[in-house]
Image (tube, rainbow, N blue to C red; front, side, top):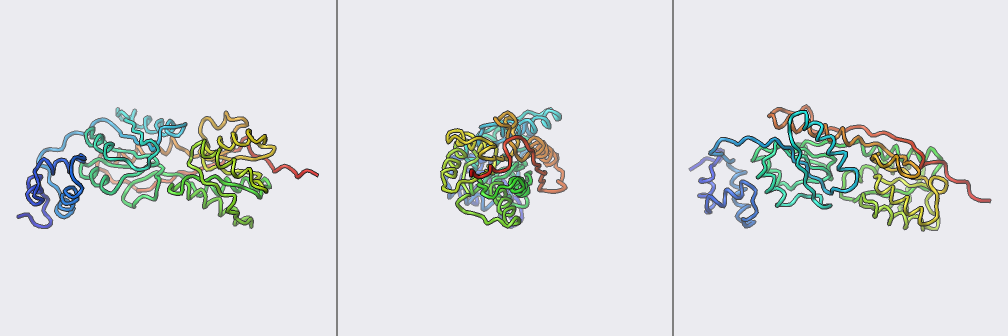
Length: 340
């Protein structure tokens, strides 16, 4: 009988769990055709004893698996450029998955990853369940989170940006221009970056002695349509805002559309600042003032961290955060003087 600390083979796991070796193999390899009760029992045995492979570990495919919560807009393009740059230097391919606006990868995605056996996975603005983490770890497939949707556990490497500082800087820019009725269109409450940018906004107002008006806080979804809907609502307030901080460039473009539909001119009647500095921001009319988030550099950093882990080396730090910066263009100006 194995001791509490000795790793078990598939056959030993099957005997203790009272199931077939084929069933245990499905659990170990992340396949879905197993009941939740059986899966939980096998995984508990693996947690207690460990799992000893009986065959030599196969060589990983020359592939980086890149998974996005949504393949929409400029955001995934900038991320892919950074990962592809590092992958090209190491003769690796990049595989791309789309979670269709879901922030948690499903079982079918994981099964595909385990079949492909890439050198590692970069999850962008999305996350994995604890069970999925364990399944990747058992197959020795490293994971790095990029722009994580939620606060990652300490043992999970991640790359992000200075979201709180960016929110503070964006709001300070509008305050320095003389605005006091500053609306914000935040992203989803579940997103770490959204919460940090909103906290930066609140801090800037507090430091300037401007009360935070809950009526000026809109809740968007980081997409153009959501930004436009929230802007329409906020611009119909009796005392409408004179400026908007849209917490990504997509929502800022939504504000542009709402302003145009209501006959307002930017920046004459309304100032707008975004966040990200996507390539399209400079081609908006007028060109968008925004907070630059170095997405391509963030992606390259995540890919480099993944390669370090894939080579069996330790990372010098598990969390990397790159700085954001203000890019002033033509969408922000002092508030219009009240008519006589």
